[in-house]
Image (cartoon, rainbow, N blue to C red; front, top):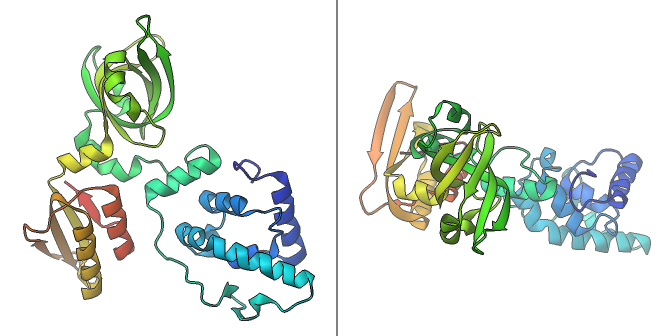
Length: 321
């Protein structure tokens, strides 16, 4: 826990002490009610949620984050009342779940991109995955190569890569203009990219840590390793939206209930766009019916759409083409 940003030794000592005195924490609410919240502050608990420290309690990180303020307020009041010998505010609580009456925990989880971004803010690096994983299948049609394939590419050949920026260094040229050296990472490796002033002036603002990019340029082989001389940068999310003709939902018949169909339709309306929607219903892995939704239902192919549909059907069901 000491490796987590914002979690100091005082908070860690308090967490360990409460566990030693009362046994393992049984739930998120048990944790909040037992630790010394003067040392384990709300900010500390936020970092623990973002890092996944409470995942074993079976609640979504988003849900715990949403009720954290209420829980801390109740727990602080309860601790003060105990010190004064007054009644326990947690008296009307499910003793097994340790959940205060009336508190509803949202079940919806953060999107994968949000989970990874929060993990990086807590750890300083991605922990449970990589931001490119949600684009893994789409990358095959949006890029020409992966980083580990570049050794076979001829010098000065045009390539298109997808990746995230690990670090960057901005310098001034002799003419007083900005350019940048950055480290790009995909699911296979990492390399240096060089963004000269002409490209930096137009697209340098895209060199952000957590935003997946589409990088177009030419390969430069040297003794120091492969480099890309960047000709253009673009958001991978925008490329996905602009290049996707249709989205496909692969479902079993029993999954496509009227309630879930209505939820999916509401999501389609929320993310209106230009891509056609096709639903593939399978039965016993032998028979498939394809439903092409009418032309007035077009959607935007984005990670949030995919995440919300996956939440409705409790698994990954979306393909972009």
